[in-house]
Length: 332
Image (cartoon, rainbow, N blue to C red; front, side, top):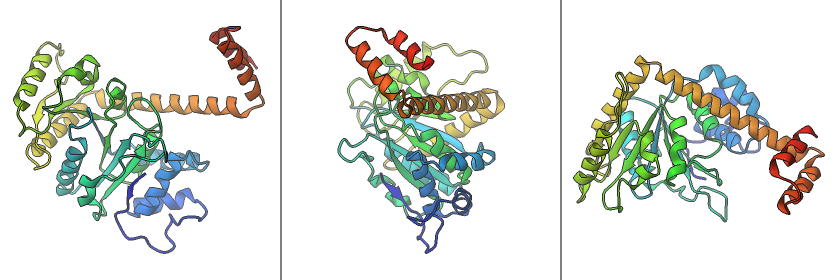
């Protein structure tokens, strides 16, 4: 995993490797701008450390302020370039920016395969920017399983905006819609059928469509195709209709317009019940995932582990159906 420390490490810092973990001290240091402490908090999340429960209890009242913006799209559309350009715009507005870049897991190291975010290196010395690559570790949906908790940590640490850039894997990537306040679906010309993703349902989750690499041949055709698709959709009165923003993120062209669209969507969310609905749905998914993980851990760690293996063997050979096996496992 790649982590960009955005200020010098200080001796005796709350995040000193090997020191006893004091969640309250780490959180206080992170809120004061100590990015090493913040990095250690995110590591506690990724590793599902025992201290994580204390961390989450302490930070719960500190959350709910950050704007969460998700960026998704097929590989090659320029998600990292758009992310870097957005960081620059938000920083020019005086906002603190956190970035969680969820990468495919390396089959060899288990770390973030694309951890070296070259395009984001310009921000590595900015102490108001924190960038962390997180390995998806096989988790479907394009997001690391720890992402919701990592978001909470960055929110509590005082970041105004958190950008979540996800793996471009297609249909399963719609998970970003349940995580972000505003979801950007990024497409680009020259990648075959640019609207192919619509058949997988990924475009349905867009709050804003971004046609990146607008300086390339075929960009206007992509915009036209998106407009045609949107014209066939039905939007009720008062509902948000996704705008289409053309950008060339490598040069910064169109990024200002994109930020205006993001702000407009944020204003619409705030003026309706949608923001509360989205955050409530996010919390529901988060609680469900934690409960299921805890249940799975308990089943694996209790004396019934051998029982689970026995039931699995019977299901595998057809002696027992999986529903009956699950009932037996739960009933003990």
